[in-house]
Length: 372
Image (cartoon, rainbow, N blue to C red; front, side, top):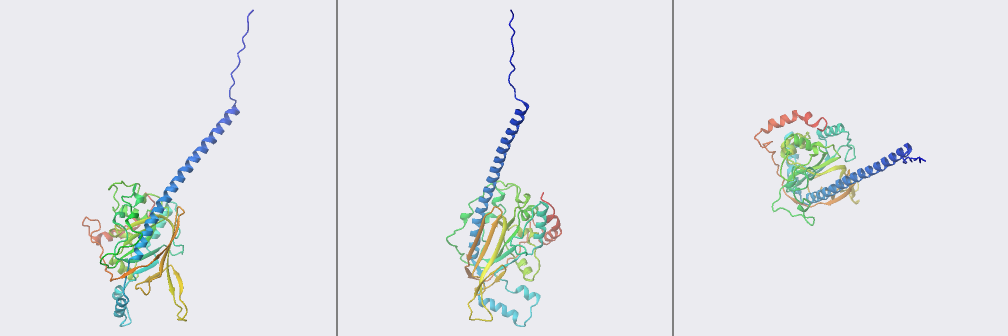
């Protein structure tokens, strides 16, 4: 008698089970990927915030050094200079240029290049709000000092352009006090804002930022990155610019490559930045009334009698860091010397007048258009 063998079929996944397994696997994979992306973004955000905090610490020391070493004009010297122009009650154009320029000047920056730079940011899909939030554009602070307030090592190679700073810049300053030079004379400089990467782009176009250089090697220049906010710069001012501004003429620093070479970026990614000068104002109708403190977004002063009691600055970075600093003022009395603009633009014997004329003609090509 022959036995019949019955083969049992092996159990298999049904179509429903396969679909459910695929869905669950996809959900787990998507959750893991989302977690990885979130952690990566958080790490980048924290790294950016940490870098901005370091830049803020350096900027605070630069401000402190600047406000504690101001060079002012003595009241006798100022009165003597003014009397020379007030004799006939009229001011000619030549006399207007020779008038004493305020040693500390807080005003709104009306440089034409700023509008072009903001339009350039719009091409990258970035809208830059008014950093001072007054509807008048960014503020600029002009101040007379005995020397440059930033170390020379910061020129052309800011931390954002290299893998690591070449030295510990924060330790370049002594926060416990400010050493004054043995001989003091006034040298004028200013703090001003430009959209992130805009001035760097011009500097790179002028050949001021080398593609290769000393270690550490540069990363992707800020000029090739979409702007994140505004960059605070410090730069010295020279006689030609001071004379033009004294006459109320426009002087577009971003079209002067020989002057841009000495501009130093302090902090990138500023969302809001506002200056205020605090000073007491007397009531002209009631001289015996106590002076009331005033908070001014625009201010000018030349002697110890008309400088503010202290200066305040508020900075809000794009990473969410907010600081509000108040600085007391220290000064010495000395005459200001006007430094002539350097003659050689590129260090190669190029005639400065011809170069500046060429720069003016190339304004639209260098400031307009999208990032490349």
